[in-house]
Length: 529
Ligand code: GLN
Image: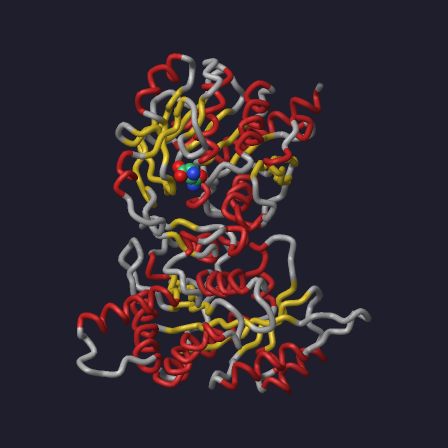
């Protein structure tokens, strides 16, 4: 097993996750099997209980684990399926060690951060790295991204574990890439001091980077590279420029141009293989039309719905359509905001805030024959909207939201649930698609598997009336309603599951493809008029 450790300097939000995923991609383009581990030094056991406005989207894996959004980047860039073991948090590590201590596994030892916590971290990394993929293959290379910024107190045990691994393994089995910010001053001069300081902080904990990736608005000049090389004690060819590009899927090409792949491959003594072009063909489509999609949500931050944004991009590429997203604040929604919009998307969410605006947006889309895609909460609210305005049940609502006729009710098994962490209906469940429906045509299959994250469902006792009034529940999991669609509408589809989590650049998610295609048709029809 070869390990590529990635640390971050200067500040968070540098695109370390995208850089890590891109390094993996360029190795994969050379025929290697690659896996990835994300370390999050916070105390939460997992991302499931965290407010997405603080840390971004909670990504859901097939096994039902709720993880950091970077695992979504890894899955999309590397086209692999990961498991809970690939997101290590301080919470998980300490829980494991404390449980061992209580069991008496340490036999009288004083349990300490070094060696007990660091041993646990090392064992965890090795375990995740060697976990076979769906085809039973173990990866050649494992990327390990250490979240946070060097110098943070909470990342110290993880950096120490990395230091130990670097010492214990042969030199050619590990490489350390430090991702840092290279800002420009008001005169446009690139400043290397923050990078120098962050490398100094890294050295203080015994870590010496082999390569430095400088994130910047413009490509690093040769002088800047020379300076970083001199002050940070790396070769000049090992200073890599990673400029901000309009599309994250172009980052592997940028790093390739900078020679990062050859540098990594040579350092790890892996064979220099020919570069496959499949990825580059997938991500470099030409657009023949452009649509605008409104996402109605209570969050103003795009990272909260990162996977939806990416799934729209994947579907856009598949249909040669550039998808522009406008974010509409659900609490201030007004129908006139949909005037220039080709489609409406209501994503997942929790709680009451902004609910009425979302319902109103769904009504506008249904009555105005604007393509609509509802996801999870968006599915539930589409049922509520239809109940209120078509069935005339003016008090229809979801049990999560308030009093009234609960057309959306708590899942029966949720009654016994204690605590909020990891207790929803999570991860993969099969969904049977009904013949002759839109969703069946989109997937081209009778049975699909998609990822879930919810506590509520369509109330079973209300289903006959809803169906009688025209809702088509075209996808089900046993007695549970999973997909709804409307017949007399250009495109009105909503899913209880989250199709966005499985969407990949080369395998766009069918509901998204159908939605973008419908938006495109609407745009073309509008232009003719
Ligand atoms: N809040 C809803 C539920 O728990 C929807 C969840 C979601 O959109 N992920 O069922």
